[in-house]
Image (cartoon, rainbow, N blue to C red; front, side, top):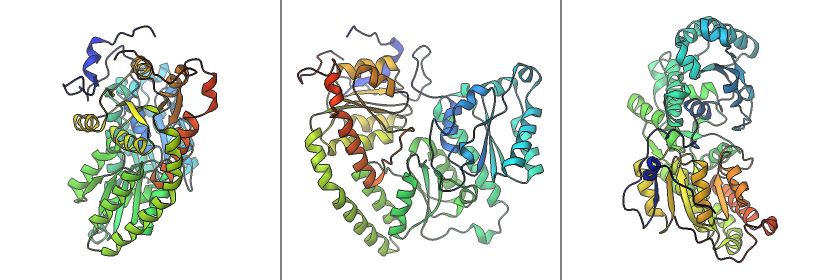
Length: 464
């Protein structure tokens, strides 16, 4: 492989454990010219809000932005599927010159009349921020006319990174909760015992239903999920929960902090990926309700039963996977922690790990978890990922839709742990699904036909 030059300003965002003592640089805007794997602010807001299935989602901007639809990031619903419809105001040159507020108002009124949603989210795109449409004023007028919440989402793509989109979505969800709370008697605002909200779970492959089933067996009621298989009324009741449990820490922690400050609801970070983290998540929630000892007893029985059910097959799969090497590049670093643990259960070595939105604490933790020689990247680009995947001779790349082409072009296996997958990868059953997929991918006979992999098992010797 010919040498690849890393941009000078990117070098502080790439470290190799055991070789670089300095902390990784992160939480900064993507470097111009690096073709970052990150998505824009608008994308971040859609990721969070799209799974609210009984709400209208209207993109205010040119038609191109509306291509970011349900089919790019799936979110299963047990009922309404209005979230699968992609609506846009389709701003043209004339609208950009004279303003798009009238077009936006007309579109909202027509869509609310035709589809009868329980709420509407209006996403501002780059051009709307440039021309200065007063989206908030339009939303207020339409809300008064239609008597449903119409919420502006300030998600102009140029404002920052995907992380800023998460914040815009959290602000919109908080407004939705506040609209309901302000119109309720004080007696209806008291917390409901033994209830939680699950934040940052998007039900991509049915995970929401699995996690809710765990808590039901434990004796805990899930008041709302934000936002997998989400419903407007459930979200509006979220201020009455006893605890917020945050799964995807990057996307919904801002909302959890808002709710703690405003309503006094404590929150904890958890992960439902892998055996260890799923068990820890359930035990941590049970510990919060220690005043009801029966919950911990039920939790222990649940965890013991679930682990016993999957360990024999996991042991068989580990025998086939031990010594294989994996590269991980995901959105949030919290998912990377769980993936490293899950792969260790399978005997797979992690040789590269990175994230789009990690913070300094995340990378310090990653550095402690990784083996010497592991490459750690923040906000990587395709060229860097390809370089290190080849130099570390990975057998498998775990990432999302944008990483898939990199893996296939390099002739290695790929596992989607992001938005396009169709099977659940969370919880105990999800760990087994993940192990099976890794094994079927890495040990597929198709790799015998790929020249880059059809050689003695000795690894590439390129330097990092």
